[in-house]
Each structure stands twice: as structure tokens, then as C-alpha cells.
Image (cartoon, rainbow, N blue to C red; front, side):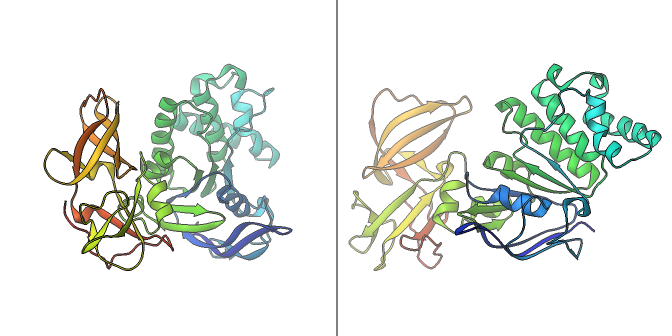
Length: 355
């Protein structure tokens, strides 16, 4: 069993709180993502799980055992760092088995494990090379191999792909996920890149200012964000939010009061619609201005304005826009995400209209 449990975990440095009352579980054999902007506490949380940071308050359990005060060596886990942390004077094979050698694993066993792990991560041809002779992707595989060879059930990864270019990041995402599933490891993976979070995680834990903002499957966070922060953080490109004010018989977009978007309430509200759920029309919907178009090959991203407020529209194929153009934007009420402007929390009680 390699289940990981955090119960009301807090980390303070003097008057500064880095992680504030965080609780979550990661099931054995699953892939969990700690996602959030820089400084949100995700790496500190990972380091507390690893035993590299002391827990100020709360409890931390691995496989049912309380390891809150246990040293890293007693937690039976491996870690992959952003910098790879390879020894430049050692070759690939020596880097991979270094931890086993420190633990005095017999030479025969080290060779056997090295052969198996090198095959798993595809490093058989470069075992004699030094890190300086490797590509970024190869160095990342060495770091992964060093984590795998320990044969721990848990692997912690702290932004391991941030130093790679976009194409290599995509390839390594696929490789890491396949590796985790093949070995049935429990993985906690820290990233600020939501593409990594959405494509790799069984569970995504979105953090903000040291607290958990929302957790769930990637689909749950994308399709049902519970706060304005989650709505505007999750998605590529992210959802833009419209400020609504009271109109005649309903809530209208601030700066554009011709059309009711939401049933009337006495509180200021915000709404968001994913770019792929907005349709450009000549005759129906909200009056808008199409400001610019970014052609991305399979689709075009349109930067539009409703009453001066920015929204994004995803159009399949190519759409040319030589100058700002008047148009109308429409959507289904079921695709509208409604939030209370003051609290930032989701509101499912108010009806959004089809436009």
C-alpha cells in the first residue's frame, strides 16, 4: 500500500505561512498533480511529503503509517527534481546506481536492476556517456531511471519538465505517464503547466496562496470550476469572465445592456464561457467587436470585446480579420459558468439564458 494522506498540514517560517491547513489523499497507484502559480505552496507541500521540510502542524501518513516526523530515509519514496541533480563527473550508469551503491546494495543486484531500468527508459545506448554529452530529454530519463531503480512505490516529481522545450515536454509527458502506469507507482507531480496537469493526472489539486482551491479529476476542474480563480486558471486559453450588472428584467454585461444573460438578482455576478462554446453570428446573440485573430493551424483564436470586456472565441480552421469588426456572439445557457462577484464562488441557482 502506498496511499498518501495529508491531514490539516501547515508550514510556517516565523510569521510567514507557506502552506495553510492542507488536507488531501492520493490513492495507491494513482497520478496526482499539485497545480498552481508560482508561490502557491505546491513545492513546499511536496517537500514536506518527502521529509525535506518539517511539518509545522498536522499529520502526514504514507501507507497508513504516520511519517510526520520521520526522516526522508524512512519514507520509502523517490524524488525527481527540476534540475535533474546529476553528478557531472559520473557516467549515466554510475548516476543511476549511485543511490544503490550508497545503500550498499550488492554489485550483482545493482547490475541486474540497471539493465532492467535502462531498458524501461531507453538509455541502453548511452550508459557510458557523461551528463554533459546528453540531450535534455536524455538527462531527464537518467533522473527518472535513478528514481525507478530504488524500487519504491512512491515517486515525487517537482516540475521535472520545466527546462525542456515544448515538443520534448509533450513527448516526456507521454513517457512519464506510460511509465507510471506500467510500474503502478503512486506519483505526486508538481507543475504550474496546466497542459501537464490535464493530460497526466488522475487527480488535480489546484492550490492558491498556500491553500487548496479545488481538487478533482481534470474533467471536473475544467467542466465545473468552483471559483473564479479555478475558472480563469484552468483551460488553454483560460476562460475570460464578464462582469454583470442589473438590467431590465435580468443581468446584463457591464457596458452592454441590450441583452439579458442571467436571471435578475440583487448581487453583482460574473459569468464565464469557454472559448469553444462561443459562436460568432451575424444575427443573434450579444453585440460584440472582434479585435484580432490568431491563426494556429487547426483553429483560430479570436480576441473579442463585449461592452469593452475581453472574451476569447475558438473557431475551427482559419478566420481572417484585417481590422476590428462588429459581430454577435451566442452560446447555450448550459455552457455558462456563474459566479458571485464578491465571494468568487460558483452559483448554480441562477438560470443563464440561451443567446
